[in-house]
Image (cartoon, rainbow, N blue to C red; front, side, top):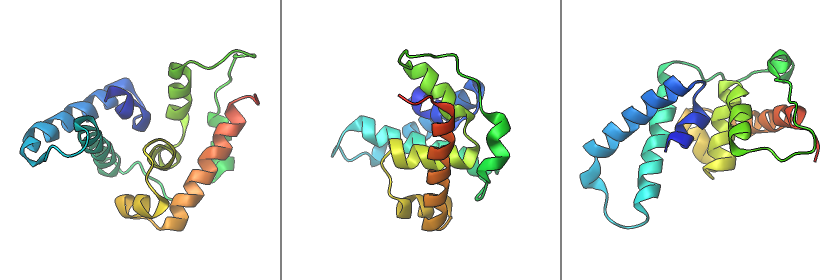
Length: 146
């Protein structure tokens, strides 16, 4: 679950706080687990919700960020022809601006629809699609063509 938290957070310390808050919620709500479906999936959903709560609490989600405004944040990659390790991809995802990162994680990794993301983040479905599109464009600039 730490990996889930790291994808939504900007630092290890922030991810550890989210993970702790998430597990507090798991233990407080363990009686609501009905035994249907995977326990890990149930826990993951709570951890993702803890990460989203953290983002909302810290007001880090920005609905509209122009891609041109984040070009200066692009890290330089020294990988040439070698495969990225999972930790490298995690670092790249962590460089995404908070709005891009949140929608990218929810859509591409967690499998939520744009409509569901809109409801979770209190944004329009179109904003979710736009943020995802911009996140993909950002990642395409960072990751060399394969």
